[in-house]
Length: 206
Image 1: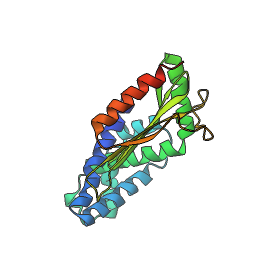
Image 2 (image 1 turned 30 degrees about the horizontal axis):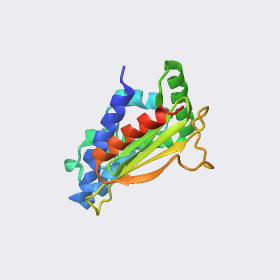
Image 3 (image 1 turned 120 degrees about the horizontal axis):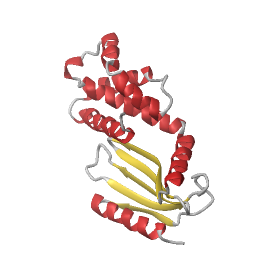
Image 4 (image 1 turned 45 degrees about the vertical axis):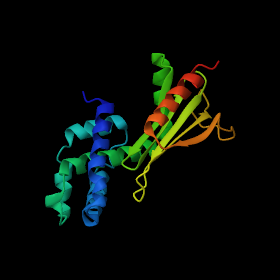
C-alpha cells in the first residue's frame, strides 16, 4: 500500500524539478505549466487524498496521454515523470483547499484516537514557499509557519506565529489576537529552532 506522506513528498520533489525551469527557459516553463495543468484537469474525477494516491499508482501513463494529444513543441526537453507527479501535486493542493475543513477534522479525530499531542491540520509546499498549521490537540494552540522565496530575490523569508484555534474543531478563532505575534527570520536554522522552542513552550502550558 502506498504511503500518503511518501506520495506527497514525491509530488513535491517533482514540482521542485519542473518549476525552476523558469530561471533558464521561459518558453519551456510556460509549456511545463500548461501541461501540468492539463494533466491535473484529467484528475478532476479524484476528490480525496486517498483516491489521489491510488490514482498515482494506477494511472502512471496519464502524462503521456495528455502530451500525445497536446503535442507541446518542447516535448523532447520535458521530464514527463516530473510532469505527471507535479500534476498530482497540483491536484492535491486543489483537494486540500476544497476540502480543507473536512481534512482538518479527520486529522484531528485521528490525533485524538491515537493520543497524539500535536496534529498538522494544514500543510502545503510549493517551489516558492510553504505553509503549515500545527495544533496542540488539548489546548488548541497552534503554530502557523510559512516560508517564501521570490524569483527576483535570493533571500528567503521564514515566518512563525502562534495562534489560538478552537480545540474542538480546529477552526481559526479570528477574533482572538495571536498568542505570539508573527515574526520573520532569514535563516532556516533559526526558524526551525524557534519552531521547536514554540512547540515546547506552548505545548507545555496548562
